[in-house]
View (tube, rainbow, N blue to C red):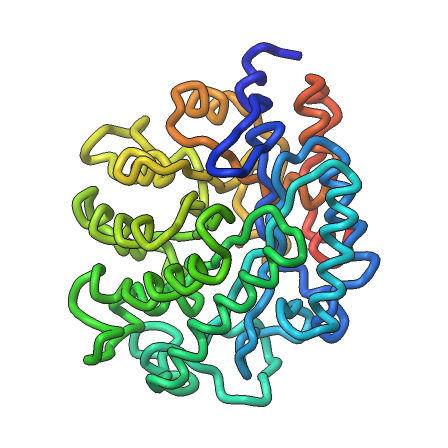
Length: 370
């Protein structure tokens, strides 16, 4: 093995989570669960990655028990006896293959994913999908409290089923992120406000409820992003000081690991401070909070994930920039998306130095569980 690649395959241990390497399978919506219930094909899909050197698998987004928590009928539930039984078979298969796994627990808020509409009205902080873009209804106090409880119930179920971690989805313009974002949170009660600290109270309450439900030792990951699917240019935190005011209350509430989503992991978060080779989002989050971070964004491939939905292919690219940043301990783990989606042997090939065997990405991989 090329010694430069060794850094990706060092073990990682933190608060009861022990991984054989630093490679994480990123959550990627597949919309291939019939009736929201994971089946044998879903279990086999994850187990294949576990059997080929992926250190931690994070599932596709799985939704909580709210009437309109998903925006596509193929998104899986993480509640109810049938769905949880299906997820039990998934984690059994992943563990049998030698892997570790956590569900990504989700509420899609008022976002659109196509023409399908849930039976209940979509809900969000202020009845907006984006700034000045109304959709659905503003959540009542009772709605918010029930949603917080539903996140906690799903996380508790993850622990009871034997998952190794649980990840909360607070990124990309979905429900939790719609509370963070001033453009979609216009509330004048305790769940809104002019500052990022005030608009983070919903996420803090979710994390606190989840921590109470799973106990002190079960690892909680929180996925965050500056950018939104509604607007790639948005920044919740304009500088490190504002980022600290955003992230520290979440860590203090009980988050163990921050999963910091960028469209391209090598881009600096605040280049005006530390230059074009400066820390990325995960790097700044780690520096500010002191907790481990996961970076993600176009690892090993040209282009980026959202372009894939438009049919764009991606070629294999070198891992030099990734190795350099991980050698510097800028962040602790790296999440890999499309490269693992189309090539379940990707991590194993990287480990054995078989770069010539790595596959590019074709959009056709989005419509099948390879």
